[in-house]
View 1 (cartoon, rainbow, N blue to C red):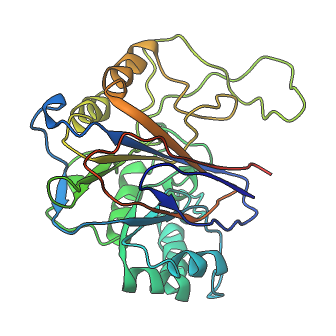
View 2 (view 1 turned 45 degrees about the horizontal axis):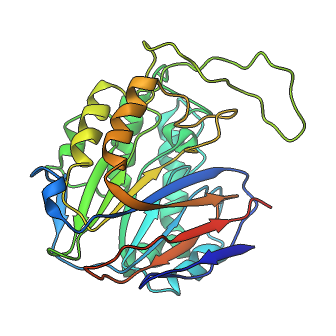
Length: 308
């Protein structure tokens, strides 16, 4: 089921679902039209083309070349971009040859081939394509896994993404007045071990973890936090942050399990946004965001997908 609340000049299109129980998150912020709020920072890469429609998805666990109906449905919307938000394969291995073979299965799937042939693809990873269920910085094959990931998604050889640890990256699209920035986080490579929950499991709750006040722990790592702070200063009319894990819930694994100091970094810049959109793909929902530009936009748009 989908609920659409639309204002101003923005619109959305319908979503389809699969049965994988996982949540990925897109945060979309309508930034103030005044460019004086932000410093002259730049995204990692910029493209002059204007984009007005984005499709996104996650959690592909296919084992053969059977077409993926939900991906085909998303592509019928003719998106300008397709963003893979993680668990793009279910690798779950320390054997890098096994990981490569699973990427090969994805690459051979006709639905995936249709995407890469007809639109630009962006991607980040989550735990299963990272290589280990609910993994973090203690995964011994993270360096090798990152190279396989970047090779599969055809990251240019001279990309800054290949020159640093982690797969986080940012993109800007369009000219002045129609700039869309896409920020993709890496919530696995640097993540410290999380504190297990000691509370009694409540009905309907995973009850895996609990929040921590230990300021020595990190989710994104020092370098990625510093990078993110700068990226939130890039001039943009629409800013999208893609995360492979939940932003709000904490009993599984989410960006809520971070220190108060880091939250302040985000609040410092999010306070400059008039309104925001939280758009989640629960149960691996695939959807597209369709929007138009208006220099006088002062609107709130929300598109919440029910978790049943």
